Image (tube, rainbow, N blue to C red; front, side):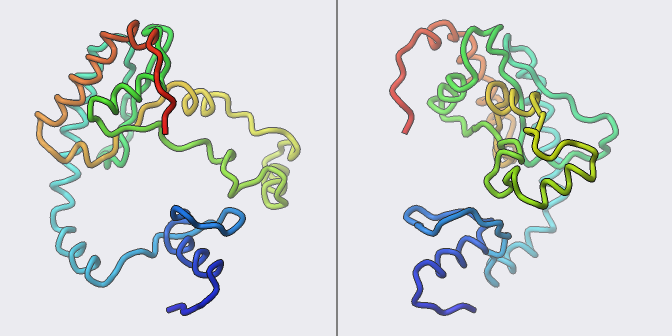
Length: 211
């Protein structure tokens, strides 16, 4: 337990137990690498009971993930990601697929905004790790790791594929969308198909700036 009258310290403590995230209105300086220490005793009791359902949830997400992948594969300009063949049991946290902007003639970002307007939760996924302020390229630890790997520590991280995927291609669907039934998955497929079918109109549309 931490009791303090120091607003900066209170904000930092809240960030440390919440994966290093900031709350709206937090003003402390610099990034923090926090952990997931947010669970209460009541939440823990619920979780212990829910763990009995985990195998069922894993199987449902696998099956719904396959249905979603099969449906998205039929949509022009949508590229699905095949599971790694060596994986024997897939536990889906985020379902990812790619938007081929050249094939659709519309950007990934506009595709996502249109999906959101159709009521489908989605986002762009996580940025490349080396772009996070938690891991500054000039940090001594990073430079030492580069030297140990035989790379020049002063060079920019050469990950053009990761950059392209994050900036222009990936769409991320949260895992809870796969815990519903077939109708819920079909809603995602239907919405993606609608957006792709109207890509030309979407590309020409004047959109309001996102909040």
